[in-house]
Image (cartoon, rainbow, N blue to C red):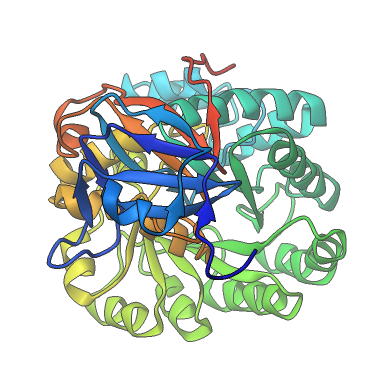
Length: 419
């Protein structure tokens, strides 16, 4: 097409009370456009602005209108930290935990990550795919259009590759984009030491994962009782050498040096950060490492030391919010994550919205989504809400009425996740 010719839209979102671009527009950090429209061609946005602004640059004559019904149009949520693929559930363990009888439950059951490892190893690829798909569909109903999915419930080369294959199938079959992370170093298998298992992750697992081409990131759980800072560094460096960008579970239950490793290696993100000190926060900010925070997880485990979100924001860290959907934190709604972040951690509603859109995209090194602008993916959602503040105010309510993923309107129907 001649560059002088306007782009031709095939879909245009109209009748919005407000379009929130999540990009600065004048003094407005959220880039709000009253009565704005969004024009889409194929998978990409070709125009965002007022009707007059977009009409000057985009041919709308053949575009199918999508009526926002006076609601708010916003970018689709990007969830940058989940363990959405797993076998079974730990509902009885969770009930025992909140009911104060966990020690009695432990007397006859394996608990925690290793309990899920047993159930995941026993499940087939098809069973894992079906159960994860139900959870991802529920996430999509709540506005999520991109989700990261970690392995880590296999802890053997074969089972970790099985989980990566599930991620591949989910990404191919579902409207939601599934970004795959190898987390072989999620826990230490029974009968192995951390050192011996680190050797296996580095020498065997990472090369096989890289050869299969099924992961974008390499992650590690750096904490007391899991992997030391030195072991974590070794694993992440091996991943980097194999072409896998670095992410890290850091400082969740102790200052174990994980944040420092993330800063020194220039990791894409450091996640949890409950025990991260001010100096390490500054180092993360200076290296551009995104801090991924999970208020739902802290709530689910009644964390004794909630993360200090305000200190991280003051230090200049780019913040992302995530569900941490997993057997110990079965949470599918980024809207609820925003509400928890605002009420429990004092994160302003504007910052919370940026953290589940632009921040989430940055935590996955994605520059083609998380905002509404020409050239970006047409990943957006429409809310039945008078203001974005409703998402942190109306607790437990799903404001989403329509989701558009890669320019295609998705049918949003409530989905009950499989157990």
